[in-house]
Image (cartoon, rainbow, N blue to C red; front, side, top):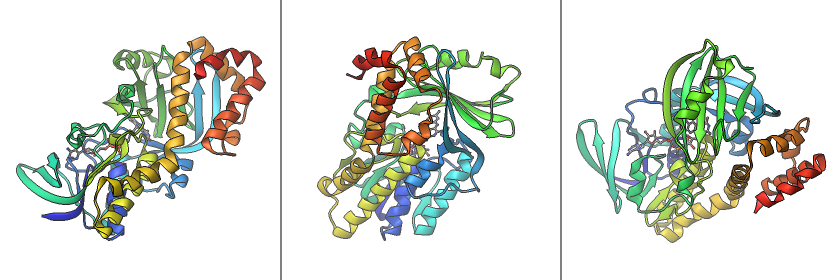
Length: 377
Ligand SMILES: Cc1cc2nc3c(=O)[nH]c(=O)nc-3n(C[C@H](O)[C@H](O)[C@H](O)COP(=O)(O)OP(=O)(O)OC[C@H]3O[C@@H](n4cnc5c(N)ncnc54)[C@H](O)[C@@H]3O)c2cc1C
């Protein structure tokens, strides 16, 4: 069967790409290997109101299961910085189902239990239940997260694949933390390269994830669960995965081909959804203009870069700088930020100006930090 656009993967990015392309009159098929949205839910289950506002979406009560006032960032030596940034935890099954319904309402066809085995020149081979089927699409959008299928694009979709963070996450009952905040622990001992996170989900439950770059996460996850706040807590389920946090997008379009979301190094639920919208929009334009060349589809890359590249650059710069610091040095930096209203400081300008502003603020609060300027290069 022939479609204008075939989307591989009902990821947050894929669902938004399908919705936008269908709303813009393309005939869209979305193929998802899971049997239902409740089975085998993705581990990503938190976001922030500001992220959703930034992409023009409202988090919906039907999938939000818990709200927080902001986040506590905890240094290796226990210095705590609190940032007011209203956030929420989601029921991922309900979240996926909500946006799938939106895609269907826009006119997209969604096939579950449909695993894409290969694709080439618009021919998509799918294992649908026990049968093998073939579909044809003018434009193929690969939104399959970290799945192997992205290799079939032949593109080097991430600039820094070596920087994937590997994670183990558990749903835990009875963690002794303030349920009004997400809690992010930094440091080489706790989670080198990224973070350990406790994200309350209400009803005495929380997601506990340990994300590590450059090492396997298991020993850090086990070590983290030894902390006092887990005394008497019960692990209900465990999952794992990889977070593309600072891998950065690289080559994400080809002739008749687009890659979006985690598969393209566009990490995060909200950011992936935003990228999906750009991707679906350009796919539909390409169909309308009868031009599915790499040159035309590159408009998606250009629109995405204009809007979001600086956000990812700032994130990568931040984590790479922290990577060069010892735990004691990181603690010293964080102490210089104690008492600063960071959310207010960060709400004023764009991402780059905010980073510069934070740098000056740090030096103002502790001029000795000048010696860390070497880490910026
Ligand atoms: C443990 C963990 C926790 C995280 N927590 C958060 C968080 O709280 N908030 C946040 O913003 N980010 C979080 N992230 C990062 C986040 O997961 C990713 O950046 C983002 O969700 C990736 O989404 P995606 O849209 O690209 O793909 P995914 O969410 O990975 O979805 C890919 C989809 O494609 C389908 N698929 C794969 N292969 C095929 C195939 N061959 N055929 C058909 N379908 C296929 C899969 O079944 C899946 O539905 C977390 C990452 C990890 C590893």
